[in-house]
Each structure stands twice: as structure tokens, then as C-alpha cells.
Image 1 (cartoon, rainbow, N blue to C red):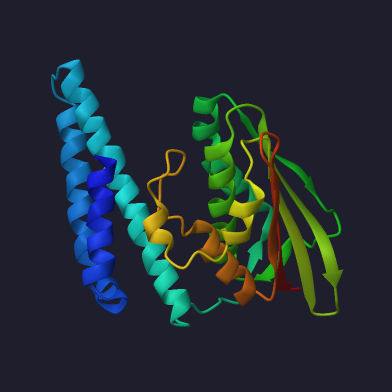
Image 2 (image 1 turned 90 degrees about the horizontal axis):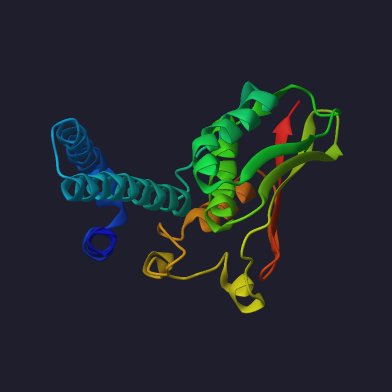
Length: 245
């Protein structure tokens, strides 16, 4: 089922221009929402175990397709410089814990832990910037760590990298005890020319655009991102982003 949906996405990207896909995204999402809704209603009826398994797969695959569409649209917007940064006050602590809380069900299912290891007390509670894009970066990175961690934990730390009169540069680190990444994969990780064609690996479930989107967003926020990893030991993704004070 997943491979069928992936084929649909490949066809979309090749045959529909990114701008046309963006214009028709509402129509596509409407149909996917209907599929999920009807599947939920059907799952509430009397079904055999086999039928329930099939419909559960349909629902999860449709949600995956929706996420893939969002990734492609985000990538398209960033590539065409349509992604504007907001500059509004927000609570940095609330933003971080919202991300962590959103993964609690997933980590319980995998029997691993996800926690905030450290937040520098020198960071002002209220900052000025785009909290939604920060949240998107963190969700992408935490999602990867959770996906590739079989045993152990995923941790998040935040420190002050540099503070000036009106701005502050924060350093985030997402660390895991997952399967790790080889050196040759690290070289290509943030610069795959066609990430949409990379989705067929057994460990992966998505477009492979998450890290590339994160890199672009970090750069929009005057920061840098890098990854350290060792096969069988785990990975650490560090990035800096700038906010107003």
C-alpha cells in the first residue's frame, strides 16, 4: 500500500509543476480527509481482523501521503523564496515542550524515552521570531531520531550560543541512541538532488525532505546545522537559530 502511494507522489512531482501542485493542494487534501473520515467510520463497524488490518493500513498510508504532500509544498515554497519569517513574541519553553509532548504516544509504543535534557536558564522565556518554523525544524529532527531509535532515548538540549543587545543565537541539539548513519551517507544527507526518489529504504517512511527543509529553514533564521553520527551508537543533530529579544 505504501509503495502505491509513493508511486502517486512520484507521478505528481514529475507531471505537475510545483506551483500547480501548490495551487491544487487544497483539493488533494480534501480527498485525503474524506478517505480518512470514511475509513474511521468503517473501522467503527463490525469487521473481520483481516479487514480491520487492511483499513488501518489505508488510514496510516493516507496520513503518510498527507505528510509527504506537506513536505513537498514546504520544499517548493522555500526554493521559490515564498517562505516568510514571522516576527512575533512567543514562549520558547512552551514551544519546546509542545514538540516533546506531541511524540509521547509514539515513544511509548516503541518503548523508548524522549525528554528535554537541558534548557539554558539564561534564555529569556519570551523571544521574538517564528515559533512555527522552529517547531517544524524540531519536529523534523525529533521525528527522525524517534524513527531510527530502537532502544534507549532521544534527548533535546538548548543553550545560548551568542547574545547581543537585541538578538540571541540559540543552539539546539537532538541526540539519540539510534542505529546511526555511515560517513558516506552523512556527506549526501543535506544535499540530495532528488530526495523524493529516496523513499524506498526499509527504515524510511517519507520523502526524505525533512532534513533538507530543516536546513533551509535554519539558514532563513540566520543559523547553521550539522550532524554527527556513528553506526550502532547514535546521532546528534545540532543547529543554531537567531531570535529577537
